[in-house]
Length: 239
Image (cartoon, rainbow, N blue to C red; front, side, top):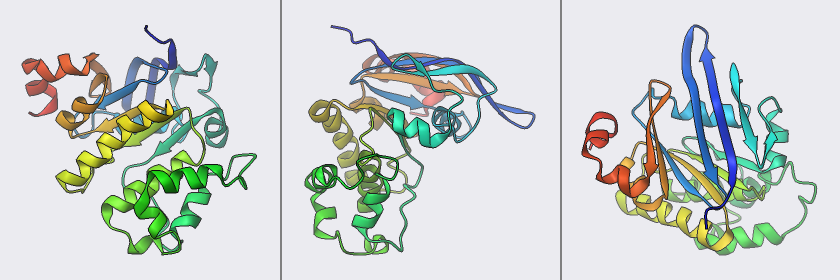
């Protein structure tokens, strides 16, 4: 059974001054979907995520979450509606402890004192539970990425947006992070949008892929079909 779209992007455009970074991008992500957004540096992937969450303003087009237009909402309201964003590099606060970083993720929740999600995140990431009182500066690269994802989960999102979660990580750690995203979808029913330059890895764990080039969608389809499409892979994905 095909589930209805949870996230819908309609003709979304965004610019930096005279430079158009997104050019009428349209895509849909179904509830419990695991979708990849792929492309080379400068393709518009990061701008897309920033525009979805209100960190960068759209010049035209719409973003719908469960049918509600969230295009012009402030970022904090986008978060409370159920969209969480893990930026490139994770952005953890290295001076704070693991637990303090996680609690930041619940900042916009009305029930932010509720320990349920904190305990769930600790169960999901045993290395974080073992280091909950340690400064984030003491964590490895893979553990910091876990912390960034865990902090986003503290907001209890409906859709999790991740920007290059494999950046700078060893291949084995990258594989664990990508497998974790599929596990989150399967176990928790989370909808995930994954921006990646590691196209082969992303397509191996996602259901659907969207390929950006110079701010436009140039290819999309089931991940297995994109992975098998030599022309698309060679022209836009570099493998």
